[in-house]
Image (cartoon, rainbow, N blue to C red; front, side, top):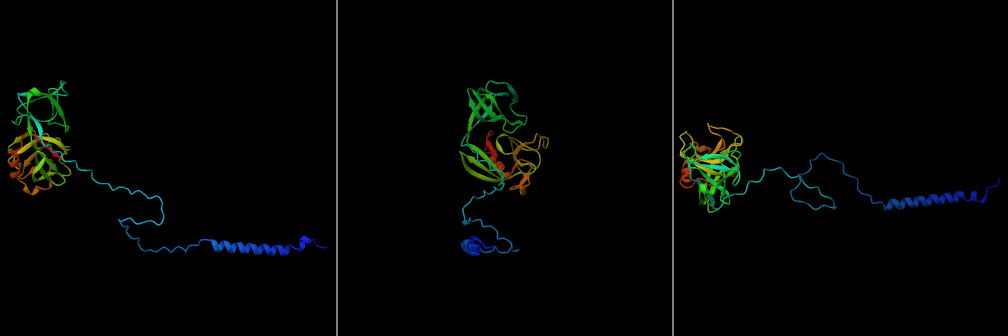
Length: 275
């Protein structure tokens, strides 16, 4: 049977189609952006990253670094150019919750130690003064009638820095002397905060030097110590090797000559900050 005309031309058409396809493949391969093959991994260690940032070849999102944990900031120095102290007039004084409020306690004057009762004043309002109290929790305050106390100005303040084991003496807001001290250990730290000197004693117990100031601060970990309530003191010491270190149960120790200098200078009620 004779073939049709369309059958006669099929081999030619097929050959042309194959030729066109091959040409297209060659063009596509020529246009492809080929990259060099990736280098084989090696066991050589990666270099340590530099702390200096380098420019990136391409822009893109950057990862925010995770901050490294660190110690909290040390409290700013609090050394007022002048403070007000209140010396109790009578044989006792009632402490109130607020001006004209309920009585929370009545304190004797003089104190059990024989020292006069003197407060650091933190606020005044309509014939009343708010004072810092030597009791737990640290920072406790109460209100007393202004007519029951004699107010006076105190230009001194002391600041203890536990990280450096130093005590700085301020007068009129300026440092006039710096002393090395011993502060509390890690297990019995000296509590931080704003306190006041409450009494000045001549210790009869060995090891405490010639003078010891009582303060409104109390240990955060010891509820009693040496027969007392764990009250923090500022005193001398016979262990001079401990000065400049964290060595005490919370009290602040000074060289005997240094505590003697302060005892001749600082009135009761003087603010003391531990930071």
